[in-house]
Length: 319
Ligand code: FBP
View 1 (cartoon, rainbow, N blue to C red):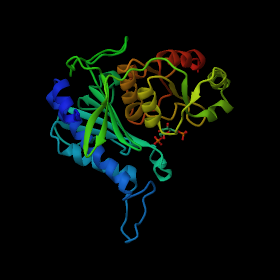
View 2 (view 1 turned 120 degrees about the vertical axis):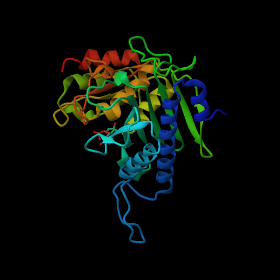
View 3 (view 1 turned 45 degrees about the horizontal axis):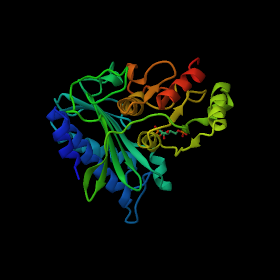
View 4 (view 1 turned 60 degrees about the horizontal axis):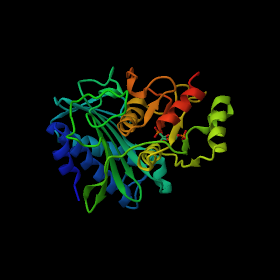
C-alpha cells in the first residue's frame, strides 16, 4: 500500500509543499488519537483526577500549531479558533485551518473533521480560494481519512490551475486511510459527477425563504436520497466519495451572510470539489473567486455536482 509520504514524494514536485502536507498529516494523527482515547470532550471539563481538560477544538488547534512550528517552511497560520493571523516564523507557506469542524458532534459520537487550505504568502487578507496550493480535509469517523487535492492536477473546466505544485500525471483528488499509524492511499482519482443525493443545511431558512422551500420540495419530489449529518466535513466528504450530490447552506435572517467561513471551511472544500470535477458557488459567484476581506468572513455555499450547483443558483441566486 502506498503511504501518504511516498505518494507525495512521487506526485508533488514541490518538496517543500509536500513537507507542509506531511506536517499537517502528523497533526491529524494526533487529533484522531485524542478523539479516540477521549482524553477530553467538546465542552472542556475537569477529569476524574481534578485536572483541567481542554475542549477538543482548542486542543486540536494547539496540536496543529505545535506541529506547524516544527516546520520552518510554514510562516503563517490562521485558525477558526484564533482571532488574528498567527506568525510562527519566516517560512513562505501559510496554512488556514478549522481544527475541529462540528466539534459538538463528538459527544454524540458522530463524525467530525479538520479542514486545511495551504497558500504561499505573508497574509491571508486579499487571497482567493484559487490561490490555494493544496487543500485537505480529515474525517474522524469509524476510520480516520484524509482527502487531499493539490494544484496542478486534473481540474474542472473554469478552475484556474496555479501550476505551482504540478502533480506528475496524478489525478487531483485522492483519499488516504489511517492504518496502523500510517495514512495509506485508499481511493485514487476521486471524481464527482451527477446523482440524486442531498445534504440540505440550514433548513430553518425555509420558514422565511420561499425559494429554499421550493428547492427542497424539488429534491424531495424528485426522489433524492437525504444524507445529512450536521457536520460539513463528513457531508461534503460523502459527496466526494460517492461521486454525486449537493450540500447547501443558504443565508437567512439569523445568518444574513451565511454561517460557514470562507477561509476556514468553504474555500478549502471548494478547491477539493472543483479538482474532483464538481463545483461550488455562493449563489452567484464561484467560491474560489471570492477575495478574503476579513478572516472570519462568512458566505452562503452550494457545493457538489455541477448540475446541482447550477440548480441552486437558478433557485436561490436572486437573494
Ligand atoms: P461551526 O463553525 O460553529 O463549527 O459550525 C460549522 C458547522 O457545524 C458545519 O460543520 C455544519 O455544516 C453546520 O455548522 C451546521 O449548522 P447548523 O447548526 O446551523 O445546522
